[in-house]
Image (cartoon, rainbow, N blue to C red; front, side, top):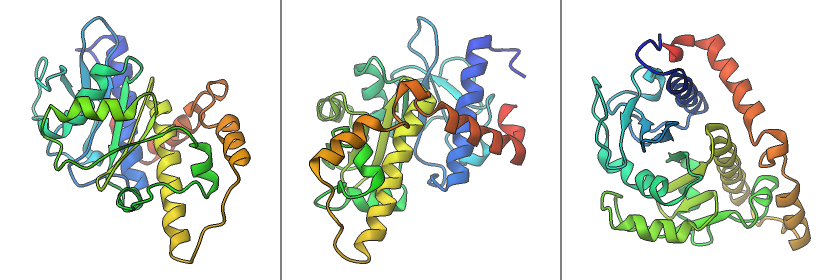
Length: 247
C-alpha cells in the first residue's frame, strides 16, 4: 500500500492510523466521534483526520481523510469529515506553530474532572507532572462556531494539556507520540483523581514537589523521546493484534 502517496505522507498516515487503534485499545474512543488530527509534511497546510462514520478500530492508513484548514477534503475520499468536530482542531493548528498533532477525547474520567469546579487537582503522581502545563477553556456549547477558536487559543497559550470544561480533554504536540504522552498523563491523572474522590480527601503535594515532578518528568522530556518509546511499544501491541491499520 501507499503507492498513491509520497513516502512522507504514507509514514504519517501509518503512524496516525496506529494511534487511532491505540485509542480504541485503551477505551478512549467515543463511537464514531472525536478526532486525532495530524498535519502533513510539506508546504501545503493539509491535515489527516478520521473518516466520519467509521469507528477508531476501522481506521486505516489509506482511509484517513486529507483536509485543509477549513475542513474541506483534499483529493478523493470515500468518507466525509465531521466538520463540526474539526472546529477546535482547526483553531489550534492555525494558531500554534508546534501543534502538528491535536487529540481530543471524551473519556469518562476526563469528562468527569472537566465537570468539576476545581478541575484537575494537583494531588497525584500524574497530575504533579503536569504542574503548570494545564490550560482551561470554558464551556460555550457544542463546538461548531468558528468564532470560539480565538478564545480557545487565547486560553491555551503555550500549555500542551487542555481541559475543556464540562466537555473533555485535549492535548497537542509537535508529533503524534508527544501529544499522546501529554494526553496519557492528563487522562491518567483524571482517573486517579476520580478514584481518590470516591474514597475521601486527597493528601496534598507540596509546591516544591510539584515543581520537581514537572521538571523531572521523563514522559515529557525530549531527552527520552517525549513519549516515543511508549508509543512505539503500543504500536507493536497493535501490530500483534491486528496489523490491518497499515493498509
